[in-house]
Length: 193
Image (cartoon, rainbow, N blue to C red; front, top):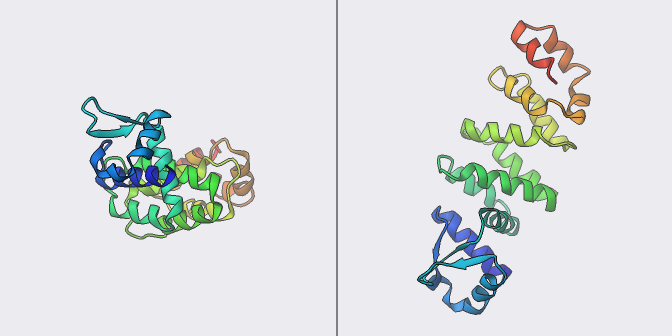
């Protein structure tokens, strides 16, 4: 049933839909009915369409599917940078990968981070995601430290790391004093960290 769940989540994500024809998975009808019986999937009233019973289950299943296919998250995101649901899919998948597969998380995060053509709204999401971590990884620290030298991302980065002790410890020595001595705007933002 887990393999089918991965296929269904991947299929729905690629088609950017929250429903799929049940007939597409007819060969695995027993597994499909099992997933319905345990409350993960549901049929529509005609029994022709299936969907996840809740968006968080879809997000979890999709994130889990990304774990099984190395590089698939970054490929998915880069191919759909303007898609409507790419941001929540990226967020939930990063959270799942970070919690379950540190190596895959690092690889996917850096593949996106180092992509020069990454759209700004996704770069800002990566900044927010890394900045919210209570125990940032060295590559997250390195990535966000670079943003503190970029005027386009300085405020966003400072806001992302504000109030987190681990981040404060990373920037208190050289970065914060430099920013606080800088112009009024940069100094103002630095005071909130």
